[in-house]
Length: 96
Image (cartoon, rainbow, N blue to C red; front, side, top):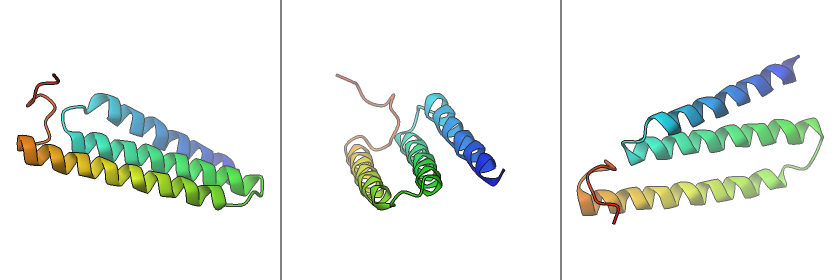
């Protein structure tokens, strides 16, 4: 019963992160935070799944490595965008 409630919580986290990603698309910072929330829910899913099948957790370390690299890349893009355009609105610059 405990595992089922954990699966439901992870599923709700994933759905909530996707809803925020779809609905809040004005600021780059909010989009990056929602993507990190989705990655965190996937990490929890993998942690529950690997512990359920009694698998080694080395894959989780690789997943965390890639998610940290993704977060650092997103923050560098955010800083670069704020330095060039002055804000993180998507409507403030041309997509050309």
